[in-house]
Length: 99
Image (cartoon, rainbow, N blue to C red; front, top):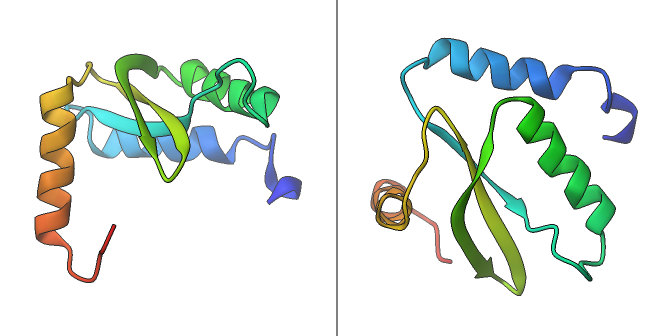
């Protein structure tokens, strides 16, 4: 919600996640801010937000439903095999998902 932006809520949520799980790596997937992206300034701001909160881009890029994404992480990097393993685990633990 636009009226809740720039009030520190997102950063506080990320801090709490890391406080609760200090030894875990945390990943997020963001729309890639590539040249020519329709909302590139918004994507760049989103990337900057995560970087201010200690996340770094990984080498993992993927496309899903016509959109390009980049994985960012905090607490250590993640490689392609681990990322695929994450989704394998997720899909086997969840029912009702049909991507």
